[in-house]
Image 1 (cartoon, one colour):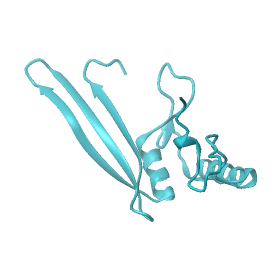
Image 2: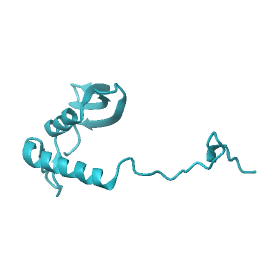
Image 3: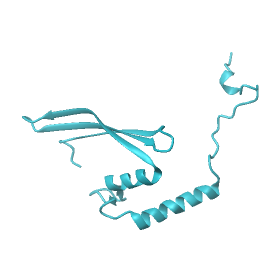
Image 4: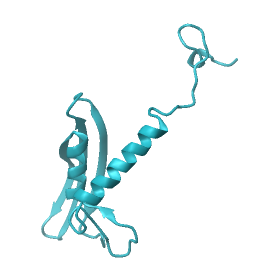
Length: 122
């Protein structure tokens, strides 16, 4: 027996499970164009983005990420979720969670977790 409760709307009609675009192609083009103009006019090579040895494409750096958060209206919250600081052995490890909250709505828009340690090569 197939459970069809998730495949029906409240009015009994079929529920589409295939997502549709939230914006038109014209709106998408405008957003991409605006972002390209922002990068060209506001982002500084070597400050906001740069090249990391061994990586071909430019990498977004922290100052550039902060500029993007500002133009998109995100509040950043940084939390160290785990740390190891072994001064005798010279080993240090940090795990950090960053939360982006919309200034307009107050909703959490994104979260990311990253980590680094002293033994990493880059």
